[in-house]
Image (cartoon, rainbow, N blue to C red; front, side, top):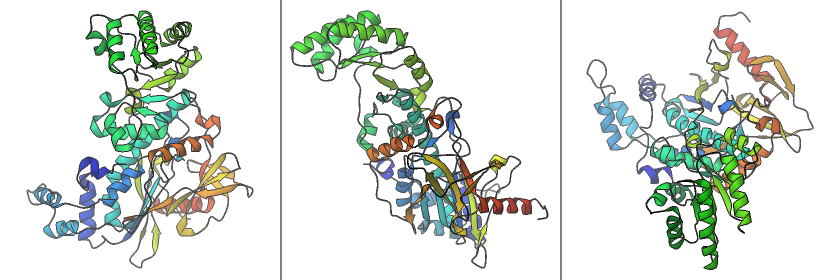
Length: 490
């Protein structure tokens, strides 16, 4: 499976916001570059108004970290940047430092395909603060987008009730990487194949496709178009039947399907791309069955998403395969996940860890201090609650979790439950230690993970809220830090 550097042919150290480098310059100039720090990458709300998120994008992170370096061309470019006074933005000593920089961070992350929830760290980075800081933008870029698309794909796959979903979004994706990363994440989330041939080559995703309306229009009539396509590709015949009249198109497909059968081949099916998909799929199924093609599948496309698919199924649509493009790869109804990367702790001049908290007028934007880990509790069949705790404080003192946004909501996770931590070591001292996983393994994990949660959490409208909270002593420490920062006597 291809790595990120195979796609871009260069390290991506400059895939960052300028303020990451200006802060790094400040740390270096003040002699604080090597001060150890801990950062967490997390999000605050599940996307699409849903009850869960599927984590994705970690392999991109690992590829990026494995190849991380500032090239000579990068340093030359940075040397050309100027401040408001027309003088160089960075002095030569700092650029020399960047040219020699070798990451020394430890990174822990939830495996791709893990179902995650707001406020939980998906990635934790520990190391020299300058090193941690310059990774922020790229890590957010990789994790935010792919987690968003994997979640959308999971929702769509849930709506089909297990019927295959084909990702058809390349032509309307947000650029080249928006297409490649979306195809990868969509497969993780539950799509069965992609139309994106480059994604198939790079990531090992099955590819599917047949013909477009232009093929039909290039012939004098639809029947000739189908006959010629069947002659060219007798083993790949899904006929697009709505160029002129859908019902006539189905009859033409049946006609050609009979000829294929006489030649020892079988028509795969027909595709509907416009009109009343519920009615037309029912009619198509009737016509195909009456003609002796009960195994021919009906594929539907046309700006589908989970809501439309659910509606079609409620109307009795006879669709067997769903082609979903624009609304999947662009996350049409929510174009960003909104993940953030916040400082949780930093060593002082004495070498002791000091927790850090970011305050806000909005409770949801107040960060959680410490070196955070997530522990998921199970009752033998289902996941029943997640505890966020501080590893710097040792093992959790209690099994009580406190809602980060409502301190009156608390839950005791009983002694009869089993549990496991979600964040796993993936990088140590700058070296990637996780063995790369193939997408089939990650996709299977996502499917299994989703099965661990109550259907109320997985439903699309007004989902049940899965219990996630701070371990009680961590909640108490966070409260004390907030009060201290606001000058409130404790």
